[in-house]
Structures are given as structure tokens and as C-alpha cells.
Image (cartoon, rainbow, N blue to C red; front, side):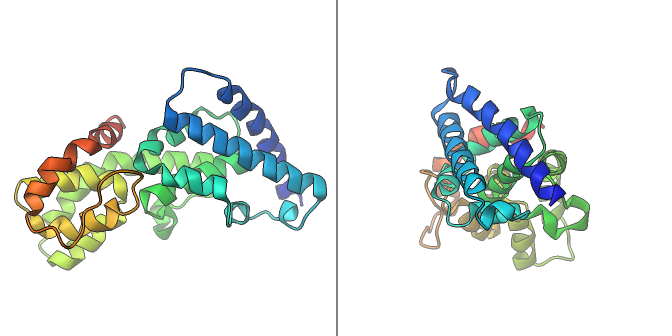
Length: 228
């Protein structure tokens, strides 16, 4: 019960911060959508608390985003939302439910699960933020290490690269453009459902040409990763 109260009290503080951001005019369309969606999520959770519903007594953050259209709207923004969600989490002075939900959103968009690996597992939003930053820093070298691992066949390399998540897309594209078309299945998996960006698929015959035509759309994602 103490854990639940702490989670929800921190969430209330975060709600006030979101309300402040909603009134800040110097925000992008993606950031505005994120702020509006979190405000709606906050409002709904506050209603659950006032009604003392079964949900309000849950200490599992994942329960609060089940069949939640506002959370889904954040995910639909795709990779363009990652820098804003990252900044939102880093700048928050709280470490409660909203921060945890932010971390979940980042993982959903990035198509990865840091908890799968003991070294990158996390227990709260701030804990995720630290692991996430380390993961992003490692992506360029991780892509190179996987590709040069002689003990892995092509399928294994693709599987490992997919595990790196969508932030690896620009670096995969670079490799394909240089001639390594064996990585195209990873691009297919990671570009699926990425906002309004073009999706790679199995019908594309000239893979290198497709990458050259579309890789610029991931320049911001590449810059975001390299800034870490």
C-alpha cells in the first residue's frame, strides 16, 4: 500500500508539471501531442483514484496503459517522439508513475525490452533513463561488433541487431547502403509502424536504392543517438 501511495503522489506532482508544459508555446507538434496525451492520462488516473477503483489500487504501472488510447497516441508518433520523451524523463524531478509510463513509451516506440538483459534491467523511470542512455551510446559500436562476429550467421546477426531497437535504424541503413543487404530484414522489422515514415518490406528489390532514397528521414534519429 505504501508503494501505491508513493507512486500516485508522485504522479500528482508530475501532473502539475505536464500542465505547465501544456501552456508553453515553444514546443513542437510531437511534444505538444505528448504533453496533451500525458495530461489526459493523468486526468483519467486521477478519476480512478477519486472513485477508488480497482485500478487505483494497482502498483503495476503497466495496468494504467492497458487499452489506453492516449498512451497509444504517443506510441503512434514513432521515433520522432523519442528525444522529447527522453528529455521529459530526464528533466522530471519526480520518479513515480508518470516517469515509469514514459519509460514504457520509449521502449514501445524503440521496439526493445531492456529488462530482457540483466545488465540493462530497470525498476523505475530514472533507472530506465540511465540504462537507456548507455544503450544509445553503445549502438554504433554494437552494430559493428555484431557484423564482424564470425561466430554468427546472417540470421543471427539480424536477430541481434533487431534487439538493439529502432535507434539502430540509421546505422543499419548506412551498412546496407555500403552493400550489406543481408541486414534488410532488420530494417523491415524496425521500420514497421514508425509514425508516418516509409516502411521497408519484402517486395523491395533494389534494397540499396530504397535506403538511399529514404535514409535522410532518419537523420534526426541518428543525431539523437550520436549526441549521447
